[in-house]
Image (cartoon, rainbow, N blue to C red; front, side):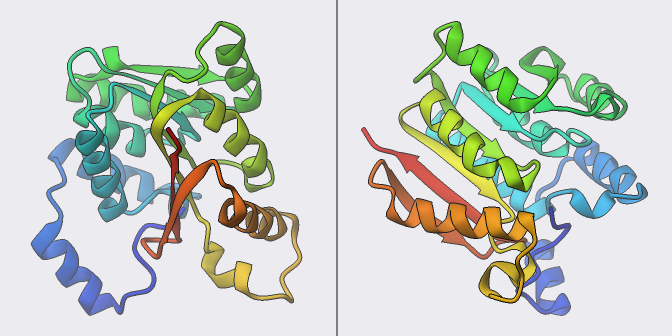
Length: 221
């Protein structure tokens, strides 16, 4: 939920994009349209999208789970990195998620790889577990309601295969997680999750200061 990497001065961030970002035109169009919305600030930054797409390629991922679709920008980045037989399940509770993403996915030629579920994400995750999908996903991205992050984490960890990777967004929360005066439910949930992951022996961990903070959690073998 950050349109740019906030830890860099603007001129350095623009330089970073100028020499590293290779954003396909269709993604630029979707990002620009998203920016016009009331909640456009919720969109991930383009450098984060490209980074996650690179992770998908590095892993040779074929099966991705996303919690939080919004306008479908992050899903499109990742789907473009999937092989022809790859699949991405993306979850959102809002019917509005159908308004933007699917048309862009179609235009980019990846709509057959993306399965959008409009329902509470925890219900979708539980359904996947019930039909035997535990341990079958290569990559998971969590970027939705923060108070449910601890629950999303546990369910996604079950669904990831051994050696699978989870990316968790907004773990720095604009710096609020490091401010003891901040006690709103979102901040408390993120702070608790960060502490939990730090002590969790089931994963290998790295928290990156990209955008609003991105934690990578590698499920143990």
